[in-house]
Image 1 (cartoon, rainbow, N blue to C red):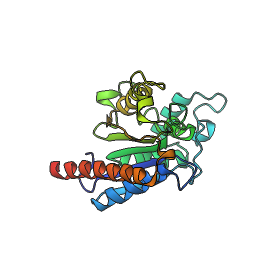
Image 2: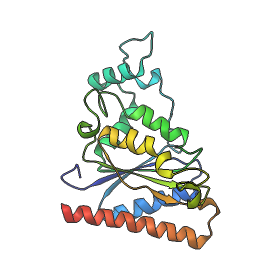
Image 3: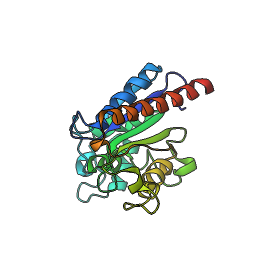
Length: 225
């Protein structure tokens, strides 16, 4: 845990439909963690109108106004206070969090574009990672990160030898290239298999299991404090 006082969770939610099952998972996470005494922040990317496209608008005072080099401008902005307000807001939410949970459907075997774009813009070079600031020396060391996903297919489809391939392989770019790369501990993902086709009882079982997992995580943190 990174904070000395109340632990903080950041829920980054990426689904265009508020009544989606991913939305139900978000609500369960907020309810469970808040009930355990955590401060909970929610980045609802669609409802907040988050722009997922990295570009010159990410910087208020670019070092080179004639040619965009994203990493170079991110570093310049990180050192000189030149991040656009929406990027800075998300960076600060990320930095405050002890636990980061990305909640989304699995689309085309990866993250929805808006969520990948959140990473592109918010994982700022020179602040969230950098030369010599990765993995064990990453700026987000001490934080934990977790995926909470819904899928269209059953669990068997995402197993080794399944038609879609091993889910751990599909998620390697997130667990290794986003979470661990910036210093965070990558937790086992929570997956609601075939949530869009599941009956009410199965969906409730998923919510109960997700809530129990988060409650156990919060209790372990409290015991370790």
